[in-house]
Amino acid sequence: MDEDAGALPKKVDFSEWYNELLWRAEIMDVRYPVKGLYVWFPYGFAIRKFVYQRLHELLDRDHKETLFPLLIPEQEFMKEAEHIKGFENEVYWVTHGGTTPLDVKLALRPTSETAIYPMFALWVRSHADLPIKIYQVVNTFRYETKQTRPMIRAREITSFMESHTVHATWDEAEEQVESEIALSREFYQSLCIPIIISKRPDWDKFPGADYTIAVDTIMPNGKTLQIGTVHHLGDHFSKTFSIQYEDKNGEQKCAYQTCYGISERCIAALISMHGDDKGLILPPAVATLQAVIVPITIGKRHDDVMAAAEKLKNDLEAAGFRVNLDTRDMRPGAKYYWWELRGVPLRLELGPRDLDAGKAMAVKRGGDKTTISLATAADDVNRVLGEITEEIRAKAEEHTKSHLCTVDSMDALNSALNEGKVAVVHWCRERGCGDAIEEKANSSLLGTDVRSEYVEATDGPCIICKKPGKATLVGRTY
Image 1 (cartoon, rainbow, N blue to C red):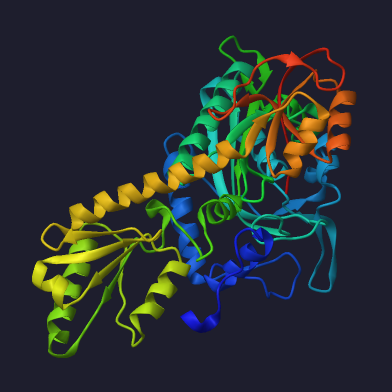
Image 2 (image 1 turned 90 degrees about the vertical axis):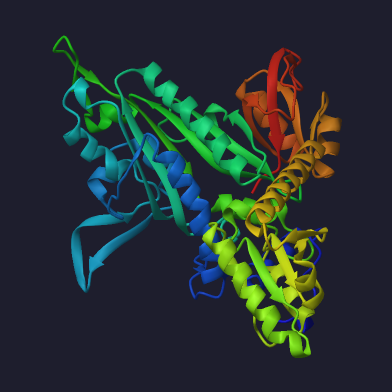
Protein backbone atom coordinates (compact mmCIF):
# COMPACT_ATOMS: atom_id res chain seq x y z
CA MET A 1 0.00 0.00 0.00
CA ASP A 2 1.40 3.41 -0.90
CA GLU A 3 0.80 6.98 0.21
CA ASP A 4 -1.75 7.48 -2.54
CA ALA A 5 -4.13 4.88 -1.09
CA GLY A 6 -5.94 7.58 0.86
CA ALA A 7 -5.98 8.57 4.49
CA LEU A 8 -7.39 6.41 7.25
CA PRO A 9 -10.75 7.40 8.70
CA LYS A 10 -10.26 9.74 11.65
CA LYS A 11 -9.94 7.97 14.97
CA VAL A 12 -12.93 9.89 16.31
CA ASP A 13 -14.93 7.54 14.06
CA PHE A 14 -13.51 4.72 16.13
CA SER A 15 -15.36 1.73 14.70
CA GLU A 16 -14.60 2.65 11.09
CA TRP A 17 -11.00 3.56 11.99
CA TYR A 18 -10.44 0.25 13.78
CA ASN A 19 -11.85 -1.93 11.01
CA GLU A 20 -9.96 -0.07 8.29
CA LEU A 21 -6.68 -0.10 10.19
CA LEU A 22 -6.75 -3.87 10.68
CA TRP A 23 -6.36 -4.53 6.95
CA ARG A 24 -4.48 -1.38 5.94
CA ALA A 25 -1.75 -2.10 8.52
CA GLU A 26 -1.91 -5.84 7.72
CA ILE A 27 -3.00 -7.05 11.14
CA MET A 28 -6.09 -9.14 10.35
CA ASP A 29 -8.05 -10.06 7.25
CA VAL A 30 -11.78 -10.16 7.93
CA ARG A 31 -12.73 -11.80 4.62
CA TYR A 32 -12.65 -15.42 5.81
CA PRO A 33 -15.95 -17.00 4.68
CA VAL A 34 -17.24 -17.84 8.18
CA LYS A 35 -18.76 -15.06 10.26
CA GLY A 36 -16.72 -14.21 13.34
CA LEU A 37 -13.54 -16.03 12.20
CA TYR A 38 -10.53 -13.99 11.10
CA VAL A 39 -7.08 -14.53 9.62
CA TRP A 40 -3.88 -13.06 11.07
CA PHE A 41 -1.64 -11.39 8.52
CA PRO A 42 2.06 -12.15 9.13
CA TYR A 43 2.72 -8.59 10.33
CA GLY A 44 -0.13 -8.72 12.82
CA PHE A 45 0.85 -12.21 13.94
CA ALA A 46 4.34 -10.90 14.70
CA ILE A 47 2.79 -8.30 17.03
CA ARG A 48 0.89 -11.15 18.64
CA LYS A 49 4.14 -13.09 19.01
CA PHE A 50 5.88 -10.36 20.97
CA VAL A 51 2.83 -9.58 23.11
CA TYR A 52 2.36 -13.22 24.07
CA GLN A 53 6.09 -13.70 24.52
CA ARG A 54 5.85 -11.18 27.35
CA LEU A 55 2.83 -13.00 28.80
CA HIS A 56 4.69 -16.33 28.64
CA GLU A 57 7.68 -14.80 30.45
CA LEU A 58 5.49 -13.64 33.31
CA LEU A 59 3.53 -16.88 33.63
CA ASP A 60 6.62 -19.06 33.42
CA ARG A 61 7.83 -17.68 36.73
CA ASP A 62 5.57 -20.07 38.64
CA HIS A 63 3.31 -21.81 36.10
CA LYS A 64 4.04 -24.70 33.77
CA GLU A 65 2.80 -24.56 30.19
CA THR A 66 0.69 -27.45 28.94
CA LEU A 67 -1.80 -28.32 26.22
CA PHE A 68 -5.20 -30.00 26.52
CA PRO A 69 -7.46 -31.28 23.71
CA LEU A 70 -9.91 -29.08 21.86
CA LEU A 71 -12.75 -31.62 22.03
CA ILE A 72 -14.64 -32.22 25.28
CA PRO A 73 -16.96 -35.24 25.72
CA GLU A 74 -20.54 -34.29 26.39
CA GLN A 75 -20.72 -36.23 29.67
CA GLU A 76 -17.77 -34.27 31.10
CA PHE A 77 -19.02 -30.98 29.73
CA MET A 78 -22.47 -31.47 31.24
CA LYS A 79 -21.28 -32.40 34.74
CA GLU A 80 -21.22 -28.87 36.10
CA ALA A 81 -24.76 -27.51 35.73
CA GLU A 82 -24.13 -23.90 36.77
CA HIS A 83 -21.05 -23.66 34.58
CA ILE A 84 -22.82 -25.16 31.58
CA LYS A 85 -25.79 -22.85 31.98
CA GLY A 86 -23.41 -19.95 31.44
CA PHE A 87 -22.20 -21.38 28.13
CA GLU A 88 -25.07 -23.50 26.81
CA ASN A 89 -26.05 -21.02 24.08
CA GLU A 90 -22.44 -20.58 22.92
CA VAL A 91 -21.24 -24.15 22.39
CA TYR A 92 -20.35 -25.65 19.02
CA TRP A 93 -21.01 -29.41 18.94
CA VAL A 94 -19.27 -32.06 16.83
CA THR A 95 -21.83 -34.78 16.09
CA HIS A 96 -20.22 -36.80 13.28
CA GLY A 97 -16.89 -38.39 12.50
CA GLY A 98 -16.94 -38.25 8.72
CA THR A 99 -20.42 -39.57 7.88
CA THR A 100 -20.74 -41.66 11.04
CA PRO A 101 -22.79 -40.26 13.95
CA LEU A 102 -20.73 -40.17 17.15
CA ASP A 103 -21.85 -42.16 20.16
CA VAL A 104 -20.94 -39.19 22.35
CA LYS A 105 -21.22 -35.60 21.16
CA LEU A 106 -18.03 -33.55 21.45
CA ALA A 107 -17.98 -29.86 22.38
CA LEU A 108 -15.46 -27.45 20.90
CA ARG A 109 -14.08 -25.87 24.05
CA PRO A 110 -15.64 -22.51 24.93
CA THR A 111 -13.22 -22.62 27.88
CA SER A 112 -11.33 -25.59 29.31
CA GLU A 113 -12.48 -26.26 32.86
CA THR A 114 -14.40 -29.39 31.87
CA ALA A 115 -11.47 -30.63 29.78
CA ILE A 116 -8.80 -30.06 32.43
CA TYR A 117 -10.51 -30.89 35.70
CA PRO A 118 -11.17 -34.59 35.03
CA MET A 119 -7.41 -34.87 34.56
CA PHE A 120 -6.74 -32.94 37.77
CA ALA A 121 -8.83 -35.61 39.55
CA LEU A 122 -6.31 -38.18 38.32
CA TRP A 123 -3.23 -36.09 39.09
CA VAL A 124 -4.10 -34.98 42.64
CA ARG A 125 -3.71 -37.60 45.34
CA SER A 126 -1.78 -36.07 48.23
CA HIS A 127 -1.12 -32.66 49.74
CA ALA A 128 2.38 -33.15 48.33
CA ASP A 129 0.93 -32.82 44.81
CA LEU A 130 -0.24 -29.28 45.55
CA PRO A 131 -0.22 -26.61 44.39
CA ILE A 132 -0.67 -27.25 40.68
CA LYS A 133 -0.23 -24.20 38.43
CA ILE A 134 -0.57 -24.71 34.70
CA TYR A 135 -1.53 -22.64 31.68
CA GLN A 136 -2.12 -23.01 27.97
CA VAL A 137 -2.55 -20.66 25.00
CA VAL A 138 -5.20 -22.12 22.71
CA ASN A 139 -8.13 -21.31 20.46
CA THR A 140 -11.62 -21.44 21.93
CA PHE A 141 -14.98 -21.32 20.17
CA ARG A 142 -18.12 -19.50 21.25
CA TYR A 143 -21.22 -18.96 19.18
CA GLU A 144 -21.23 -15.20 19.59
CA THR A 145 -24.65 -13.81 18.69
CA LYS A 146 -23.88 -10.12 19.15
CA GLN A 147 -22.21 -8.08 16.42
CA THR A 148 -18.82 -9.68 15.81
CA ARG A 149 -15.66 -7.58 15.70
CA PRO A 150 -12.08 -8.83 15.19
CA MET A 151 -10.31 -9.58 18.49
CA ILE A 152 -13.17 -7.99 20.47
CA ARG A 153 -16.15 -10.26 19.78
CA ALA A 154 -15.26 -13.33 17.74
CA ARG A 155 -16.57 -16.85 17.32
CA GLU A 156 -13.05 -18.22 17.36
CA ILE A 157 -10.82 -16.69 20.02
CA THR A 158 -7.49 -17.58 18.47
CA SER A 159 -5.17 -16.75 21.35
CA PHE A 160 -6.79 -17.55 24.68
CA MET A 161 -4.38 -17.83 27.59
CA GLU A 162 -6.03 -19.70 30.44
CA SER A 163 -4.28 -20.65 33.64
CA HIS A 164 -5.71 -23.18 36.09
CA THR A 165 -4.43 -23.75 39.60
CA VAL A 166 -5.22 -26.17 42.44
CA HIS A 167 -4.59 -25.45 46.13
CA ALA A 168 -5.08 -27.04 49.52
CA THR A 169 -7.08 -24.19 51.07
CA TRP A 170 -9.44 -21.36 50.12
CA ASP A 171 -6.94 -18.79 51.44
CA GLU A 172 -4.12 -20.20 49.32
CA ALA A 173 -6.36 -19.93 46.27
CA GLU A 174 -7.11 -16.32 47.20
CA GLU A 175 -3.39 -15.61 47.38
CA GLN A 176 -3.14 -16.99 43.85
CA VAL A 177 -5.91 -14.63 42.72
CA GLU A 178 -3.91 -11.70 44.07
CA SER A 179 -0.78 -13.00 42.37
CA GLU A 180 -2.58 -13.14 39.04
CA ILE A 181 -3.96 -9.63 39.50
CA ALA A 182 -0.38 -8.45 40.06
CA LEU A 183 0.69 -10.34 36.94
CA SER A 184 -2.01 -8.56 34.94
CA ARG A 185 -0.78 -5.20 36.17
CA GLU A 186 2.77 -6.02 35.14
CA PHE A 187 1.71 -7.36 31.75
CA TYR A 188 -0.38 -4.33 30.85
CA GLN A 189 2.26 -1.96 32.20
CA SER A 190 4.62 -3.41 29.57
CA LEU A 191 1.96 -2.71 26.89
CA CYS A 192 1.45 0.84 28.25
CA ILE A 193 -2.26 0.09 28.73
CA PRO A 194 -3.86 1.58 31.87
CA ILE A 195 -6.26 -0.83 33.54
CA ILE A 196 -9.03 -0.70 36.13
CA ILE A 197 -9.59 -3.74 38.35
CA SER A 198 -12.90 -4.49 40.04
CA LYS A 199 -14.97 -7.32 41.50
CA ARG A 200 -17.85 -8.27 39.21
CA PRO A 201 -21.33 -8.40 40.78
CA ASP A 202 -22.51 -11.89 41.68
CA TRP A 203 -24.88 -12.12 38.71
CA ASP A 204 -22.02 -11.36 36.32
CA LYS A 205 -19.33 -13.62 37.78
CA PHE A 206 -17.90 -16.64 35.98
CA PRO A 207 -20.39 -19.54 36.15
CA GLY A 208 -19.40 -21.70 39.12
CA ALA A 209 -16.98 -19.20 40.70
CA ASP A 210 -17.03 -17.88 44.26
CA TYR A 211 -16.13 -14.49 42.80
CA THR A 212 -14.65 -12.90 39.68
CA ILE A 213 -12.11 -10.11 39.44
CA ALA A 214 -12.11 -8.34 36.08
CA VAL A 215 -9.54 -6.19 34.29
CA ASP A 216 -11.00 -3.42 32.12
CA THR A 217 -9.57 -0.64 29.99
CA ILE A 218 -11.28 2.40 28.51
CA MET A 219 -11.33 2.41 24.73
CA PRO A 220 -11.07 5.60 22.60
CA ASN A 221 -14.85 5.94 22.32
CA GLY A 222 -15.34 5.70 26.09
CA LYS A 223 -16.61 2.13 26.12
CA THR A 224 -14.91 -0.35 28.41
CA LEU A 225 -13.26 -3.52 27.16
CA GLN A 226 -12.74 -6.47 29.49
CA ILE A 227 -9.15 -7.60 28.87
CA GLY A 228 -8.67 -10.14 31.63
CA THR A 229 -10.44 -12.05 34.39
CA VAL A 230 -9.36 -13.94 37.49
CA HIS A 231 -11.82 -16.35 39.12
CA HIS A 232 -11.73 -17.83 42.61
CA LEU A 233 -13.53 -21.12 42.05
CA GLY A 234 -13.63 -22.22 45.68
CA ASP A 235 -14.23 -25.99 45.95
CA HIS A 236 -17.19 -25.92 43.55
CA PHE A 237 -15.50 -27.70 40.65
CA SER A 238 -13.40 -29.96 42.87
CA LYS A 239 -16.60 -31.40 44.35
CA THR A 240 -18.07 -31.94 40.88
CA PHE A 241 -14.95 -33.55 39.43
CA SER A 242 -13.72 -35.25 42.65
CA ILE A 243 -10.44 -33.35 42.87
CA GLN A 244 -9.43 -34.50 46.34
CA TYR A 245 -6.20 -34.82 48.25
CA GLU A 246 -5.10 -36.63 51.40
CA ASP A 247 -3.88 -34.13 53.99
CA LYS A 248 -1.07 -34.68 56.49
CA ASN A 249 -3.50 -36.35 58.90
CA GLY A 250 -4.67 -38.85 56.29
CA GLU A 251 -8.06 -37.16 55.74
CA GLN A 252 -9.58 -36.72 52.27
CA LYS A 253 -10.30 -33.09 51.45
CA CYS A 254 -11.57 -31.21 48.42
CA ALA A 255 -9.10 -28.91 46.74
CA TYR A 256 -9.64 -25.21 45.94
CA GLN A 257 -9.07 -23.74 42.53
CA THR A 258 -8.57 -20.60 40.46
CA CYS A 259 -8.64 -19.87 36.78
CA TYR A 260 -7.37 -16.83 34.91
CA GLY A 261 -7.75 -15.70 31.32
CA ILE A 262 -6.41 -13.18 28.81
CA SER A 263 -7.33 -13.26 25.12
CA GLU A 264 -6.29 -11.37 21.98
CA ARG A 265 -8.47 -8.57 23.29
CA CYS A 266 -5.19 -7.40 24.81
CA ILE A 267 -3.99 -6.73 21.25
CA ALA A 268 -7.27 -4.99 20.35
CA ALA A 269 -6.65 -2.72 23.35
CA LEU A 270 -3.03 -2.18 22.30
CA ILE A 271 -4.05 -1.11 18.81
CA SER A 272 -6.99 1.00 19.97
CA MET A 273 -5.40 2.77 22.92
CA HIS A 274 -2.27 3.99 21.19
CA GLY A 275 -3.08 4.36 17.48
CA ASP A 276 -3.79 7.71 15.81
CA ASP A 277 -5.11 9.11 12.54
CA LYS A 278 -1.97 7.92 10.75
CA GLY A 279 -2.22 4.29 11.92
CA LEU A 280 -0.63 2.09 14.56
CA ILE A 281 1.54 3.31 17.40
CA LEU A 282 3.32 0.40 19.07
CA PRO A 283 5.31 0.40 22.29
CA PRO A 284 8.85 -0.70 21.36
CA ALA A 285 8.71 -3.79 23.59
CA VAL A 286 6.04 -5.43 21.40
CA ALA A 287 6.61 -3.76 18.03
CA THR A 288 7.21 -6.12 15.11
CA LEU A 289 10.04 -3.79 14.10
CA GLN A 290 11.52 -1.34 16.58
CA ALA A 291 13.34 0.79 14.01
CA VAL A 292 13.42 1.16 10.25
CA ILE A 293 16.39 2.65 8.41
CA VAL A 294 15.55 4.72 5.34
CA PRO A 295 18.67 5.52 3.30
CA ILE A 296 18.50 8.76 1.27
CA THR A 297 20.77 7.91 -1.67
CA ILE A 298 21.82 10.66 -4.05
CA GLY A 299 24.16 10.39 -7.04
CA LYS A 300 27.75 9.43 -6.38
CA ARG A 301 27.25 8.96 -2.64
CA HIS A 302 24.84 6.03 -3.14
CA ASP A 303 27.34 3.32 -2.26
CA ASP A 304 28.71 5.20 0.76
CA VAL A 305 25.23 5.76 2.20
CA MET A 306 24.19 2.16 1.60
CA ALA A 307 27.34 0.83 3.25
CA ALA A 308 26.73 3.04 6.30
CA ALA A 309 23.09 2.00 6.43
CA GLU A 310 24.06 -1.69 6.34
CA LYS A 311 26.56 -1.12 9.15
CA LEU A 312 23.95 0.73 11.20
CA LYS A 313 21.50 -2.14 10.73
CA ASN A 314 24.13 -4.71 11.72
CA ASP A 315 25.15 -2.72 14.80
CA LEU A 316 21.56 -2.41 15.99
CA GLU A 317 20.72 -6.05 15.34
CA ALA A 318 23.86 -7.12 17.20
CA ALA A 319 22.55 -5.12 20.17
CA GLY A 320 19.26 -7.05 20.03
CA PHE A 321 16.98 -4.58 18.25
CA ARG A 322 14.46 -5.58 15.58
CA VAL A 323 15.43 -3.52 12.54
CA ASN A 324 14.55 -3.24 8.86
CA LEU A 325 16.66 -1.57 6.17
CA ASP A 326 14.19 -0.28 3.57
CA THR A 327 15.90 -0.45 0.19
CA ARG A 328 12.72 -0.55 -1.90
CA ASP A 329 12.55 1.57 -5.04
CA MET A 330 10.04 4.04 -3.58
CA ARG A 331 10.02 7.73 -2.77
CA PRO A 332 11.16 8.47 0.81
CA GLY A 333 7.71 9.96 1.55
CA ALA A 334 5.99 6.75 0.52
CA LYS A 335 8.28 4.79 2.82
CA TYR A 336 7.55 7.15 5.69
CA TYR A 337 3.80 6.64 5.17
CA TRP A 338 4.22 2.86 4.98
CA TRP A 339 6.06 2.57 8.28
CA GLU A 340 3.96 5.15 10.13
CA LEU A 341 0.84 3.19 9.22
CA ARG A 342 2.43 0.04 10.68
CA GLY A 343 3.46 1.73 13.90
CA VAL A 344 7.25 1.31 13.79
CA PRO A 345 8.42 3.35 16.82
CA LEU A 346 11.54 4.88 15.26
CA ARG A 347 12.59 5.87 11.74
CA LEU A 348 16.29 6.46 11.08
CA GLU A 349 17.02 8.57 8.01
CA LEU A 350 20.55 8.48 6.63
CA GLY A 351 21.75 10.66 3.75
CA PRO A 352 25.09 12.08 2.56
CA ARG A 353 25.03 15.04 4.98
CA ASP A 354 24.15 12.77 7.90
CA LEU A 355 26.97 10.46 6.94
CA ASP A 356 29.47 13.34 6.83
CA ALA A 357 28.33 14.45 10.29
CA GLY A 358 28.54 10.90 11.69
CA LYS A 359 24.85 11.02 12.61
CA ALA A 360 21.42 9.80 11.54
CA MET A 361 18.13 11.66 11.78
CA ALA A 362 15.87 9.85 14.27
CA VAL A 363 12.14 10.44 13.82
CA LYS A 364 9.78 9.13 16.50
CA ARG A 365 6.47 7.67 15.35
CA GLY A 366 4.73 10.71 16.77
CA GLY A 367 6.83 13.01 14.55
CA ASP A 368 9.40 14.41 17.00
CA LYS A 369 12.91 14.51 15.57
CA THR A 370 16.33 14.15 17.11
CA THR A 371 19.71 12.80 16.00
CA ILE A 372 21.73 9.78 17.00
CA SER A 373 25.47 9.22 16.64
CA LEU A 374 26.47 6.44 14.29
CA ALA A 375 29.37 5.68 16.63
CA THR A 376 27.05 5.04 19.60
CA ALA A 377 23.93 4.07 17.67
CA ALA A 378 22.83 1.18 19.92
CA ASP A 379 22.97 3.24 23.11
CA ASP A 380 21.29 6.21 21.47
CA VAL A 381 18.48 4.10 19.98
CA ASN A 382 17.93 2.41 23.34
CA ARG A 383 17.57 5.83 24.96
CA VAL A 384 15.15 7.12 22.33
CA LEU A 385 13.03 3.96 22.48
CA GLY A 386 12.82 4.41 26.24
CA GLU A 387 11.57 7.97 25.71
CA ILE A 388 8.98 6.71 23.22
CA THR A 389 7.72 4.12 25.71
CA GLU A 390 7.22 6.73 28.42
CA GLU A 391 5.52 9.13 26.01
CA ILE A 392 3.08 6.40 24.90
CA ARG A 393 2.37 5.43 28.50
CA ALA A 394 1.80 9.04 29.60
CA LYS A 395 -0.64 9.68 26.75
CA ALA A 396 -2.61 6.51 27.56
CA GLU A 397 -2.77 7.42 31.23
CA GLU A 398 -4.01 10.91 30.39
CA HIS A 399 -6.72 9.38 28.19
CA THR A 400 -7.83 7.13 31.05
CA LYS A 401 -7.87 9.91 33.64
CA SER A 402 -9.86 12.18 31.34
CA HIS A 403 -12.48 9.46 30.75
CA LEU A 404 -13.12 8.66 34.43
CA CYS A 405 -15.30 10.62 36.82
CA THR A 406 -17.23 10.21 40.06
CA VAL A 407 -20.95 11.10 40.08
CA ASP A 408 -23.64 11.14 42.77
CA SER A 409 -26.90 11.23 40.80
CA MET A 410 -28.54 9.40 37.92
CA ASP A 411 -28.66 12.60 35.86
CA ALA A 412 -24.93 13.08 36.33
CA LEU A 413 -24.32 9.42 35.50
CA ASN A 414 -26.26 9.64 32.24
CA SER A 415 -24.48 12.86 31.29
CA ALA A 416 -21.08 11.29 31.95
CA LEU A 417 -21.86 8.15 29.96
CA ASN A 418 -23.26 10.20 27.06
CA GLU A 419 -19.99 12.15 27.01
CA GLY A 420 -18.08 8.89 26.55
CA LYS A 421 -16.89 8.57 30.12
CA VAL A 422 -16.82 5.76 32.67
CA ALA A 423 -18.22 6.67 36.06
CA VAL A 424 -17.77 5.65 39.66
CA VAL A 425 -21.02 5.69 41.65
CA HIS A 426 -22.02 4.40 45.05
CA TRP A 427 -24.12 1.25 45.15
CA CYS A 428 -25.60 -0.68 48.07
CA ARG A 429 -24.84 -4.04 46.36
CA GLU A 430 -28.51 -5.01 46.22
CA ARG A 431 -29.52 -6.58 42.91
CA GLY A 432 -32.61 -4.39 42.54
CA CYS A 433 -30.61 -1.18 42.73
CA GLY A 434 -27.97 -2.64 40.41
CA ASP A 435 -30.62 -3.46 37.82
CA ALA A 436 -32.07 0.04 38.18
CA ILE A 437 -28.67 1.64 37.54
CA GLU A 438 -28.14 -0.43 34.41
CA GLU A 439 -31.64 0.16 33.06
CA LYS A 440 -31.86 3.88 33.76
CA ALA A 441 -28.40 4.60 32.37
CA ASN A 442 -28.38 2.02 29.56
CA SER A 443 -25.09 0.78 30.98
CA SER A 444 -23.33 -2.07 32.72
CA LEU A 445 -22.52 -2.22 36.39
CA LEU A 446 -18.93 -3.40 36.08
CA GLY A 447 -17.83 -4.01 39.62
CA THR A 448 -17.06 -3.02 43.18
CA ASP A 449 -13.80 -3.07 45.17
CA VAL A 450 -12.43 -0.78 42.47
CA ARG A 451 -8.65 -0.77 42.26
CA SER A 452 -7.23 2.07 40.20
CA GLU A 453 -4.79 4.90 40.75
CA TYR A 454 -7.05 6.99 38.51
CA VAL A 455 -10.09 7.05 40.82
CA GLU A 456 -10.66 7.54 44.53
CA ALA A 457 -12.82 4.64 45.74
CA THR A 458 -14.78 6.01 48.69
CA ASP A 459 -17.98 4.93 50.44
CA GLY A 460 -21.19 6.91 50.08
CA PRO A 461 -24.99 6.70 49.79
CA CYS A 462 -26.35 4.40 47.09
CA ILE A 463 -27.24 6.37 43.97
CA ILE A 464 -30.68 4.65 43.92
CA CYS A 465 -31.86 3.93 47.47
CA LYS A 466 -29.47 6.16 49.49
CA LYS A 467 -28.47 3.31 51.82
CA PRO A 468 -24.71 2.96 52.56
CA GLY A 469 -22.93 2.05 49.34
CA LYS A 470 -19.53 1.15 47.95
CA ALA A 471 -17.64 2.70 45.05
CA THR A 472 -18.81 0.94 41.90
CA LEU A 473 -17.64 1.19 38.31
CA VAL A 474 -20.34 1.84 35.67
CA GLY A 475 -19.78 2.05 31.94
CA ARG A 476 -20.95 1.12 28.47
CA THR A 477 -19.20 -1.97 27.30
CA TYR A 478 -18.28 -4.11 24.31
